[in-house]
Length: 144
Image 1 (cartoon, helix red, strand yellow):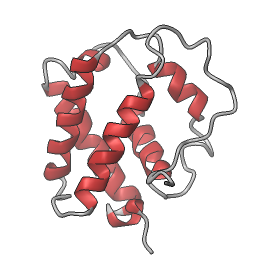
Image 2 (image 1 turned 135 degrees about the horizontal axis):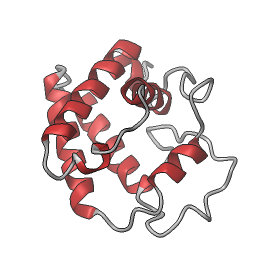
Image 3 (image 1 turned 180 degrees about the horizontal axis):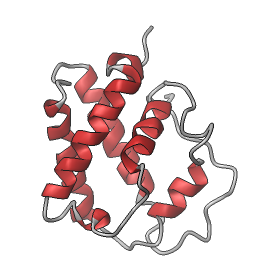
Image 4 (image 1 turned 90 degrees about the vertical axis):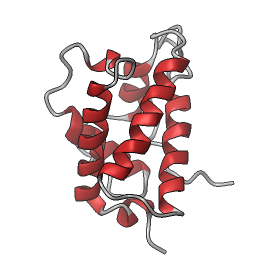
């Protein structure tokens, strides 16, 4: 069985999707908000590595870029932002089309992952204080 990471084109596919999503977010008046301040200079590459790891690829993110506690804390304490989440999900869906990820079931699985992950990263709107240090990158699909 191939992983979603492999089906989406491996590291190259994740990087293309990350670039496309980032560009779509920057062009969207709602989704651009988190990117309006200077971020990490390798944000797109780090995001691609994170998505790859979550979707069954190698541990490129946790082997040298960061850990899940850092990712969770970075997204915590921002308050409720359902409109932003919806805009980012819509940008992700268009970015998949931009890079040629247009067939099911892969497209639906990637969409479902992104919706789930967006919700998971919005789980601490008030503070990062209750985020454990030993979190691991959650894998998709979730067992169940």
